[in-house]
Length: 324
Image (cartoon, rainbow, N blue to C red; front, side):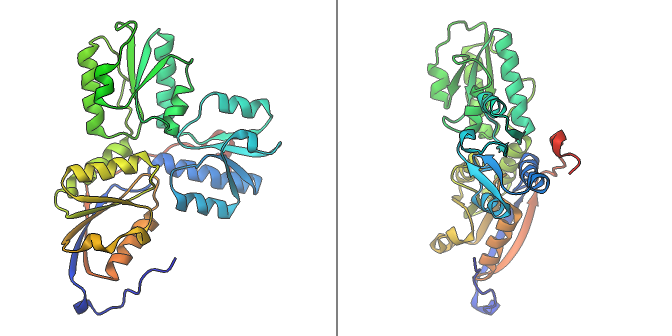
């Protein structure tokens, strides 16, 4: 993909202020998942099979394909004797059980923070609680979490309206958990509604929305009110990226989700003086720099990075890959 020529005279380009949010881009869970695929390719050689997108980003998926990863919808598509990797979003228990029954060598790239939610769900059900799970229907993380417990043990809550309308058999034995990539503000409103309606409901011991989701939303809040336009780099099917766009819009910015620089509609910048820029947790920093280069090719750009948190989180690799 060829970027525009950035060599136009500065005098011919009007000034554009760009506020770049930090933190942005890859989180520790995404870095771990990608590294698992890369190390598996080093250890086993190509091809290595991956069930679903390892993370929700086409650039990342295509880069891993080029290295020899083969992406499939279900384990049934993986040849006998091959290695298969489960995505960062987590999978129902039936998926590794299927792989094990077939004798496949499998690696689980589920984000440890998602795995924590899985364990919490199991404990709540063991305690005899029905779980009201706050999340988005059809998202892989939601499907994976529901697949940790017996059918009927959980009810999906997507909105405040759902929280107001839900009925339960035993309000004294309720729990709630949440998807890790939700809007912090929306989720707080839903939780407050559930707690008002069901005072005995038990929540998770710690916050389920992951540190990276919270930090990226806070970073967007810090700049969006200063921006005429907010560009969020991320995939349409990326929950955390969609939430960043929503947060920016609520703060008053014209907000757009783009996969790469070539998805920018340059009419968006008509009359714009300040642009905000961030990236979802599955988007590599390279894509941020592409957007900055594209802006510099058309404008006299002044960049300010606004840092609201410094992240130093790392996660261990699966034991099978620790020595690769």
